[in-house]
Length: 388
Image (tube, rainbow, N blue to C red; front, side):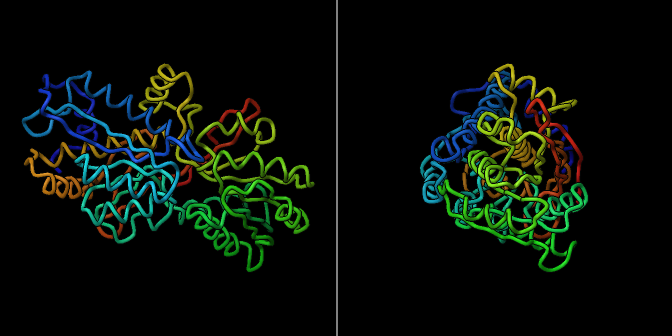
């Protein structure tokens, strides 16, 4: 590419000439506005609406010698895999989007990605960390690190920070994201501490609310840390029940803790715990702080990692569209040109960190992770950065 990605991003947000109503670029958003994790959908849409307004208020998006109004189309995947699949097909075949942002959760992103790739439409998965989302799918891209990086990061942190030689894991076996991450954590922890050092590897099924049998086994196992790669709405029940059954060791979480109203649901029970995630709002600087301040002013709450990753993912896709050059008007050709431009990204400066895609292999960004601590005020405070 002849211009830097920083300049491309500036152009996305910069001034442009007035647009005509017919000159419109459509992006689809496949997000969970209802279902088990509606806060994830709300954060996604909030960030997208903020970006759309910023671009259109500045005059639109300049692509080649034309300026386009940006239109975002939202489809509710209801936090279900089958709904994510139908939403993907609708956005691509009926709504005529040039690209799609989401789904967020791996359980929905993996099947949606298969359909997007078959239909040869670029898809950006902001928050899906399961490797299968992008595997052998040239039209599918990711905005976050992989579980194969996150799992070992959590295992190493548990071993070094807590001096843990024995660990337990509790996860939903019916969901792609926690299942894959639990397995990655186990493999990495046992590589560090020896075979059998994960002394309890307990499972449950989606929508279970009684974890007493699994947590009793964990409490008796001698584990010095419990890894829980579950969503914000599930963690509070698990933590509360663990404490009531006498497990008073550290509980370590994953990036799914950082979305939604974790602290509103968990309260004091989660204070002092750590989790691996994509960015920390507390103490942010530069462009990240500007994003946080604008989002907080608009929505009266601090943006979570889903909002930040959605912002980066949509911006990256739009910057790549600009870099691809003039659009032909043939949607199939323009989708392919966008895919090639996204694959050619060398450095994109996002608010969740810099992103680049390897020249070969799947479209998974080389990117750092952040470990945050839930402090005494219930804030997600930066603790340390971990890079590949």
